[in-house]
Length: 73
Image 1: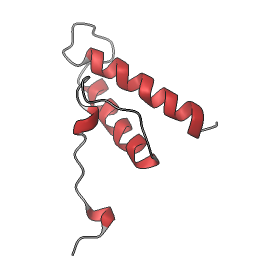
Image 2: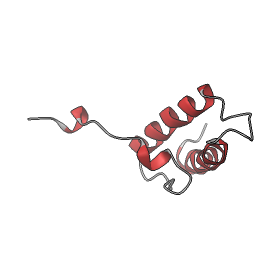
Image 3: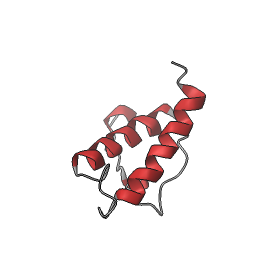
Image 4: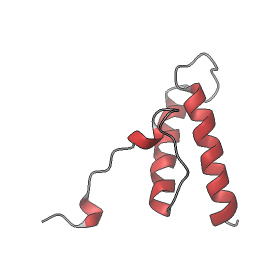
């Protein structure tokens, strides 16, 4: 029997501009951070011609909004 922490979770909700949604939990936040890190490594951060640039930009805004409310530095 798998424990909840052993679940394999797909990052798909944060992979495409049409499926990006608000972050509802710390788990969503962690998952979104892993996706945006991978997008940055793939070059989506600085290249407006990159196929995932728009998704990167939107995901960045979603992460920022979550952190603005939940991660007071």
